[in-house]
Length: 408
Ligand code: UD1
Ligand code: MG
Image (tube, rainbow, N blue to C red; front, side, top):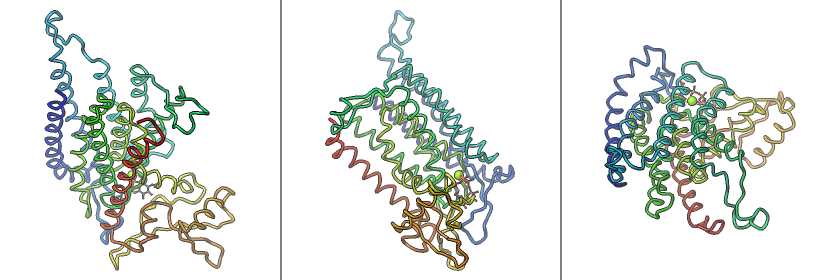
């Protein structure tokens, strides 16, 4: 029965792909009329491009999922029909049902909040708070269905902590933070055509490969099935969006898509019980976040946009910069820039008047620090290459290496 359910889910995903492909161009003008557009900063003509199309593919995703809901709960349960209960399934899987519903509720909330961010340009504190609130229903279901807050210890620390450790409420805080991380991490690795969707496509494909492997091995079948049900339609609508968002972008995805994608990943990681593996698929985003810390937490000035600087003469992207006087940084700020400078992770130009000019601390700029001015299309390809490479590393850590640390 599982195969038929997955096949039907795939069929609905294909339908969602063609639906998204058809409606995105039709809505472009409507978004511009509603003042939902952004200037493509890395182009000569700085054209106005419709923005927040993530809301459209998010809706197509939700419609696809709503159509899918009856499938696993009629097909698979048909086998368990009990005539005495009047044709109702004898053992209706309420737990699985509520998981799917609440997953869609959290994703739906995040699409709404992302759209609010695009329209109202929310402050950073809201961006951190909103995903946390959107995960609460999810955590509640986790609490009711599992409430397992025990973590298995790696072999080398078992002498100290024992085989496993119950971290209680800390586990819920960790899961809440996972949603905040996934949503914002995609949003700050952005600014060049196709990158938000490109990275999400690779993460989604990696999750699907992981689910397929685990399903074949017969591990945690319910969790991985649940993940496939959400990931296939997500991959489908993102592919359609990618077609219009890749270089040269005809549409921008907006924060709506970043939040929608991040929340969908967090939901499958939490309710599919593979949040640690999920984090492994976010390696480039983790690196970008760690590298960004000095600017995100204002130890070093952070301009509104950190995307690379466009040179209209050569049509290439150069690093974008920030400047400061070393004596205006606090002690932590000084320490951070000194470490980054020592390891040659940032450019460093001291002006005669004491000002220092460095690149903005993003992975996109770092690629440009290493490879010099590069065309926008190529920078996106390079970063997607990094994402694929990191997924391969993630699989190596998850399978061959994990067996040294855990009993897999
Ligand atoms: C985040 C980043 C910001 C980056 C921006 C780009 C942090 C803390 N914030 O801010 O540095 O500049 O994303 O998305 O790291 N744009 C393009 N080409 C693209 C995509 C976007 O020019 O391919 C520009 C457009 O003008 C678009 C704008 O970026 O309107 C969208 O920025 P927005 O999503 O509002 O920025 P943030 O998410 O706040
Ligand atoms: Mg954004």
